[in-house]
Length: 352
Image (cartoon, rainbow, N blue to C red; front, top):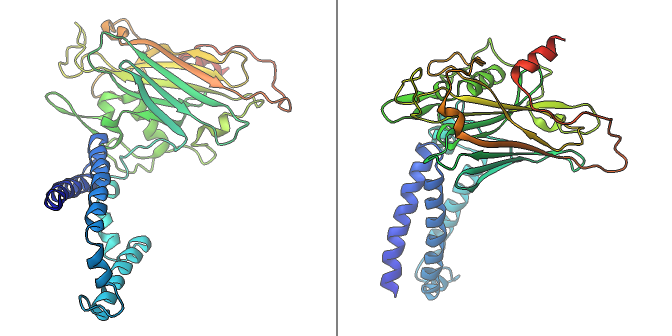
C-alpha cells in the first residue's frame, strides 16, 4: 500500500504542478481549473495518508532532543516556511516580481469579470440564466433567462449587459468564457477579436472603460465622472428607475447570400428590453433590435434587418425578470407595465 500511495502521489502532484503552471501562464479555463482543484484535493488526501504512515518519524524528528534532526536545522525549516508565508502575503520581492509575470497581471486590461453579485450558469443544454443580486435586501434583483433554439449544435457567443436609457453601459453581467479573458478569439480558420464577434458590446465597453479593442488605454474615451458603473443604484424601487437589458449573440458559420464569410456568416444580433423597476409587471421579453454590421464593424447598431435570415432562428426566447421586494414602508408610484424596448426608441425618448 505504501508503494501505491507513493506512485499515485507522484502522478497526482505532477498533474497539480502542470495545471498550476497553465493557470499562471494562460487565460482562465474551467476545465484546467477543475483539473487543478480536483488534483489538489486528491493530492491532499494522499499526503494525509502518507503522513499518517510516517508519524513515528515525525515525532522523533521534532522531538526536543531529537537525534534525527538537530535544533538548528529544525529552526531553519520553520523560519524558511514562515518567510515564504510572509513574503507571499506582503508581496515582498521576489514574490511580487513572480506574480507580475502571470497572465492575470500581464493581460489585466483585456480581462472582463462580472460583479461578485452576478451568478450565471447553463440550466439546460439550450438554456442559460444570468442573475444579478442586489446589495441591499430592499432593492430589486434581476434575472435574464436566455433560451436558444434546440436545433443548435453549439450555443452562440453571447454578451449580456445593462445600459442607461441614454445608451451608456452600466455593467457587464455576462460574457462567454471564450472571450472573457482574452481579446482574441480562435476561430475555425482565423483569429478574430471581440470587436469582430460582438462589436456592439465591445463598442459600449470601450466607451465606459477607456480600454480599446487592442487592450490599450484610450484617454479620449470613458464615461463622465458622475456615471455609475454598477447596477445597484438603478435597482432601488420608488425612484422612477429605468434601464435597458441588452443581449448580443453571434453564431459562427451561419452564412446567407449577403453574409458569405465562412468564419462567422451573418452579423451579431442585438436584443433589448426596457426595465421599469416600479412596474407591476415583473417580466419583459427582449426584442430583436438590430445587428452589429459583421466583421470589422465600428460597433454602431444597424437597424436594417432585411439581410438577416436564418440567424433570427438562433433565439427561442430571451426574458428578463425583475424581483422587487414590496415592503409596506416603500411607496411605489403608479407606473406603466414593463415594455419591450429598442435602442431607436431610447434615442427618441432622450431627444423628447
